[in-house]
Length: 297
Image: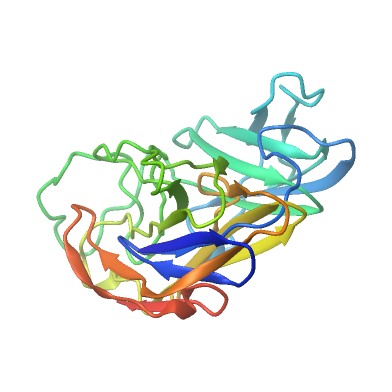
């Protein structure tokens, strides 16, 4: 889903979409998400076998944090989950990749942004899974590991902005359309008065195509918060039978830098829904920013 926004001296964000795409106007500044902040925050990481909703914890999972900014003193810190599948860090503000490793599970990496107290639920998949009650469909793209049956999982594949097979794009991206710039994830978009910014939300149920794997009432919601000269765009997605994912977990937030006195204004009616291949599916409601939008099953 995509939205389009533009920068004005006053007003609120306008929207336009593609995959879910929206257009808005920018105001505010703040901590650059690639930097590290001066304060340490409490970070709780829990590791689960499959969907966290099943609450099957993984003890003995090794965690290694790689900071986006290599000068961050917490770059490279490590820990191992306890008997409850939990490990507590105290980290400087900033963005990190978490490498999760366990001898009985496929390796997975996650991206988080720590600005305040943070709780992260991370899902890993066993090396061997129990076969489903019915035959598996032919291998589509040969993506491994195969997620468990009956547990829809949103955006569960490795994140890549290139759209390759067996990968997911970031949950939220944005680009300056006026300047014909490319999409940015976990970074900053520069803009100015009367320029248009397109916001792209991406949601994908990454399990195999069985009836019991259908994600029901999939919703996506974006939020734009302002501080000084920067607007921070965040997102979350969930379903009735799938756990909530956030942009902090799935590719990072996007910051939009503007001039003093400028704001993001959503362009009414600009939100549209696209398929993974770029085919237009239909229009979306502008309420995706703030209230959220139901994509259906």
